[in-house]
Length: 174
Image 1 (cartoon, helix red, strand yellow):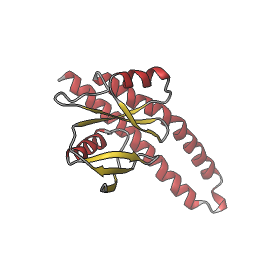
Image 2 (spheres, helix red, strand yellow):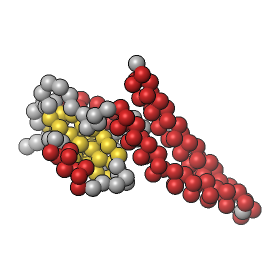
Image 3 (cartoon, rainbow, N blue to C red):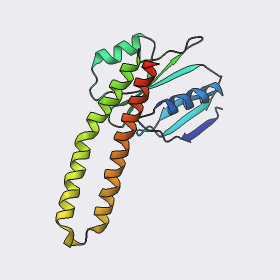
Image 4 (cartoon, rainbow, N blue to C red):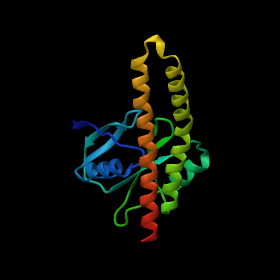
């Protein structure tokens, strides 16, 4: 009988390295990932042998067969796809830790793709917020407060993506 463990792990798109490192650590303890929920927050593991497995998270707004075949041909296995363009890949290794990104510019491009997807939603939220402000006399203070929170959250997302890109650019210079 296999031992099964379910873990929740909250991670952010601007810093997927945290979930990648956590999954690799779980593998190092013999907890092999076998299922991820559609949002990429709940992970199911079985207790098996310890392995060196590299996990990489990628965001692609549009995927063609070329993207999938390049990674599969290089030995990567897709573990999860969902939540609007996120992909989780894994690859066993022995010595050198592999990566799906060949350079830092690829990581910056991934973050920029994510930003481009978020912009239309952000603009829609702002438009609804302005509409709510114009029609304040209808007792919609709760909705106005909710949209202030949403706008703040999106601003925080954009800030974190930009901050992470700046960190990556500074790492290139050093």
